[in-house]
Length: 173
Image: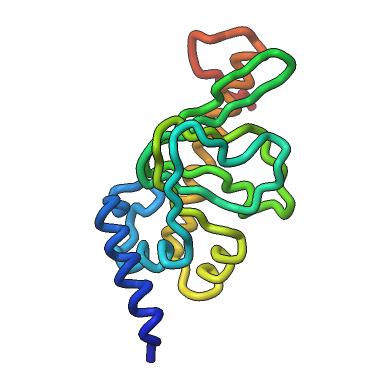
């Protein structure tokens, strides 16, 4: 039998899922609203004003952030240069290396570009969800997004290395 506290958390999580149309997010493709609510219930919703810094390059990462609404910029700085590495919006996530690697050190700053609502999951929360009833489709979706990011990074590296910005560069062999 489920406790009253669990039922209330699930009701609140279902309401959050509806409010932000999370079933439309790539990360939740193929999941039921109940499965999504279970994941949401494991996290914390954080509202953040524009211009705020979520974390700095060099900080130890302990959280994964899913953008429910708003925009986040991932920014790298070196010497006197500042480069926006990515601008992420609703349905996208970042900080996932914290989930994979213990004591992960962030390689960029995360800056809130406009007022945002984030679902924040810590390693502890994720482990609890994974140990309980994590839908396999959710893990497949995470792997798919990570694959796409690795592919994009490989192409950026190859273009920079060979000074070719005209097209994607594919590995040979």
